[in-house]
Every structure is written in C-alpha cells, then in structure tokens.
Image (cartoon, rainbow, N blue to C red; front, top):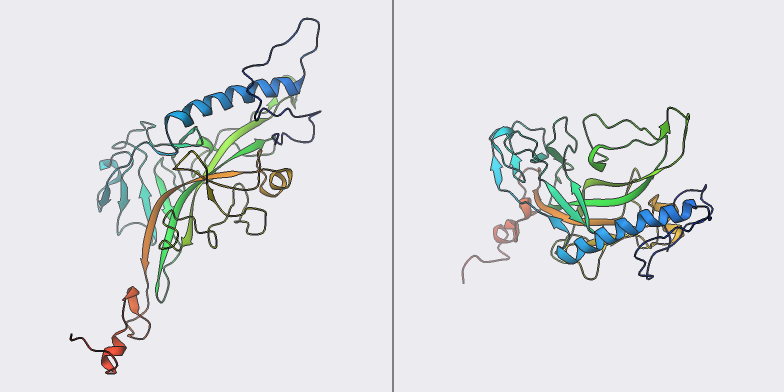
Length: 301
C-alpha cells in the first residue's frame, strides 16, 4: 500500500516488495515529484531495514527505580517516585544527572526516537496515571505509541516528535519567506506515552485487545476502525502494530501508512482507595475475610 501524501500529489509510488535500490533520473526528462518522494522513501526504508535487522524494538537504556531523591541525582532511564510529585504521577528520567545527554533512545520499527519532555517543562518525562479504583484493583499499562504524520503549514512540529512535549516546540517553517508559500511538506515520526488498563494475566505483553486501542495523532483512542487493537509484528519481538494499513485506515487514523506502532514500557499495579471492607476484597486480597468471620471457611488444615 502506498503512503498517503495529501491530495495535491499526481500519484504516489509504492516501494513495497519491489527491492528498489535507488531512483535514477534521465537526461532530457523532467523529474517528477512522485519520483523524488520515492527516492526519499527508499533511503528511509533502507535505513530502517538495516536497524530492524540489528536490533529489535525497545529502549536502549533501562535505569533503576529511585525514590525521594532529586531529579538531578538520577541517571538516564531511572524511574523516579516522590511524595512531592502530583498524585498518580512518576517520572522517567531523560537527563543524566541534570545534563542533556540525549541518551534515552527507543528504537521502534527501525526508527530512533529521543524520549524526552513528556508532560514536563524539563526534558524529563512525567507519566500521568488515572486515579486508582475505589474497590478491587487494576493494572495500568504504560506504553509508547509511534506513527508517521504528514505535516502541513497549519500543523505543530513537535520537538523530538513528542506530541506531549511540555516545553517550546520548533517553529513551523514550511512556508518559504522568499516565495511566500509552501513548496513541500514533511513526514514526522511522532509519539506519545500512553496509559490504558489491561488484563496482564491473560495478556502478559500488556496489549489487551479488549482495552488497549489505537490512537495515534487522534484526540482519543479509536475502537471502531479495522484492526483497532495491537498485534505483535512478526520478526520483531519488541514491536506491536495497530491499523489495517489501507486507505480507510489512513483516513481513520490520519497516519501516512495507516498504522501505528507500539512498544511496552511499564505495568503499574494499582491498589484501591476504598475503606477496609471484608466483602470487597480490599487491595486485591485473594480471599474475603468475611468467609472466615461467617464460619463458612476455616483457617486451619
């Protein structure tokens, strides 16, 4: 399936299953925009293919769990919790003892992504969980979702491609000041850190098809499109993908290729906030104390 590059293209050339190495222009023949676009895609596809053959999708650095220390004392990849943070948040550290080393890299589908600045004015990442349940328990699944987005003059160009970036994003410079109009567009690889409930017992990867749905650049997850759930990508043990990859998916998801890609990050066990009650199995107790108090169960062999 060829990429969606907007309505102003005469045609879009597909490179899938063709084993093209490059595009060769000819004397006396006009270069076409579709051929220039194909040349650019071949270069990016070849680069991603090389990286996919070398490393599976995932983070290159994993730190330690730290509590009640300053962000400036943490290493890249550390997970920091603190009672001083806003409730239901923790931080994934991107700075190396306060220095921007640009080392928190996630490889996703052969693309290197710098994971910095989510929900934060600093380059560290603040991960925001929903409120805990009032009864029972819940597993909150944290994952990274990635997609290819066609950028025009009205779009935000997100720093690092992070749509949750909390600082100042780069200016959109698609309009050339000398000409006064756009002559080209861009494809940006974008991402966001997401949180969704999951049934970890039955779906140990975290990608529960009944609760974890595709979102990409949309404002909310989409449950109704074709292949709205994530499936593991053959050949890459760290990569999951949602979307059908057809023209309908391109329109529904607003992505260039009709897919979004994802890698798992964390599974957070949430205890409930309700008062103790032996009938509601507070904090996920495996047996209700009411059975023992009522004499219907015995605590002796």
